[in-house]
Structure formats: C-alpha cells, structure tokens
Image (cartoon, rainbow, N blue to C red; front, side, top):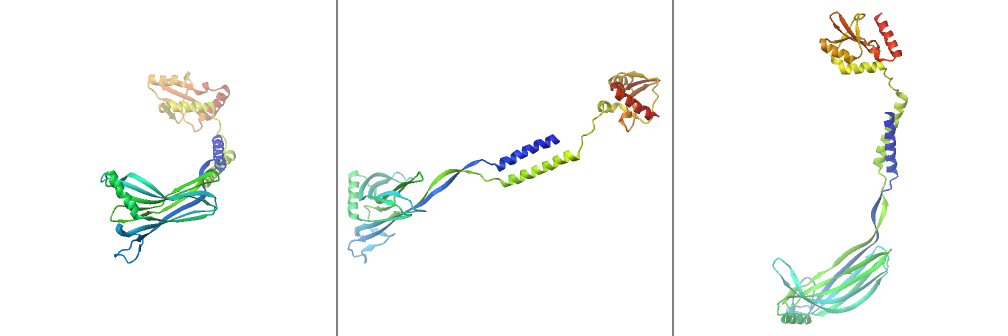
Length: 352
C-alpha cells in the first residue's frame, strides 16, 4: 500500500506540474486595424417643360414618365473611416453601362445578353491619410440619348430586350499595415430602365466594414479547477502515506504450520470432523501425507478427525478410526525440526 501511494503521489505531482506549467499555445486572431466603407447614391430628375407637372424637378422613389424627363443628376458619396490614421492609396471613376437582358425561363431571372460601357468621369486618384476621408461627385446625363441608343440596339439585334442604364462609381482602395494588405473594391450604382414609357429608379448603396487581422499564438490560461482538484488529491495521498508509515505495521509472518493447516482446511475442509476431546493414538499407524490419509478415508468410507483448539499450534494431528485400528497423519513430519519440537511441546502441554 505504501508503494502504491508513492506511485500515485508521483503521478498526481506530475499532473499538477503539467497543469501549472502549461505550454499549450492556441492560435488567436488579433485586430490590427478596423475600417468601414460607406457609399451612397442620391439622384434628382429634371423635367422638360410640360403641362402636367408644376415643378421642373422630381425627387426620389417615384414613377417617372420618359416623355417628360430631360436629365437625371446622380450624386455619389463615398467615405472611408478607420480606427486610426493610416496612409492608403485609392482611385475611382464613373461609367454608364447600358445592357440588354432577357428572361431565359419563368423560373430563372434575367440574363445579360449584351453590355456597352460609356465613360462619364475619367480615373481619379486619392490618398487617405486621416481616419476619415470623404469623396463626393455629381454626374448629369441626358436620358433621351440613352433611350435612342436602346432603341437602336433592339433594332440591330432584332430582339426586344429589356434595356437598363447603370451609373456606376468604381472605387478601389489598397495599402499595407504591418505587412498586411488592404484591398477594397466598392461599386455603388443607380439603375434606370430604358426604352419604356414609364419607369422607377433603384439605387444600390454600400456599407462594407473590414478589418486587418493577424494570427498570433497565445498561451492558454491555467485551468484553476484542475489545479484545485489535483492539489486536493495530492493532499489526501500525502495524509494517507503518513498514516501508513507511522500508524500501521506489517502483519506477522505466518509459520509453516499455519500455512500447511490453511492448505489442508482449504482443500479438505468438507472431509474434516472436529472433536472436542482427545483420542488415544498410542497404538496408531502413521501415514506420510494428508493425501494418503484422504485416500485411506475414501477406501474405508470414514471421516478425517482432529482435536479442535482455538490455538492453531495445537492442531497438528489428523486421524481416522476403523474398528480397533487408528491411522494418523502427523503434521509435524512436514515441519523443520525446531518448529516441530515447539509444536510437539505445545501439544503435550495441551494434553496435560
């Protein structure tokens, strides 16, 4: 038990040491820079002189009659904002994209068949140095010019397509921070149907956050619950070891007589009969082993007898009786001379 406690003490001590000196690293992402891109499109519809409208302009989110529209003024606004000052490079341009589309089937959306680009504003460059950098540009187009192009395209293709006009601002931003690259591409736009008597205008605004992150290895925190649990177990083992060392002693070594008696009672206990008084065995015939006595008992169909005593040292003879004959096995014959003499003396004293 002491050896087992020492082994457990070493095992729990090593476990506690491993928990306290934890070297397990975990990958963790750390934000180096957080930013946001916000791009919006606003527009105003300018009307031709007409008898239906009192004002010469119309605002957003209305239904417009193509016959009365002179021009459309679109205003693009873009703002880059970050959590600290950083230098980035950017560029933008504005183009008009006229595209023809058709529906392939009822279950599918429109697919673009052709597309033509018209530059409205050439490429412009800019530098972002502050944490906020706004850009604002206004473009005005004549709607009749694009309607004429749409009619011509349908005539040339000999297919009646749905023709749309998109005013798109292409914005690119790039740079580096702590060897990490920032690349953003934002395209706010406004969509205007062409070659139709009336239409609605839709806009696509952009709100696109972003972050530059870096992966680092972080040591995991110590598991306090494991430290407490292993400390408690360690304390219990130490207390148990102290108890075993100072408050217990080894069991006395069994004598040869006791070992042999245990073997006999374990193997032949159901054949033995205990007597409360002594039997005269002065004229007995002795056998060499308990097995010989068992075979003889089987032959004459008799039980094996012995004189019962609370002291195992007084139980050293087993015998069987058959009329006037007595057969004895003396356990002292198996013992060393010294122990046999002690057993014999004990037996004599008991008889007295």
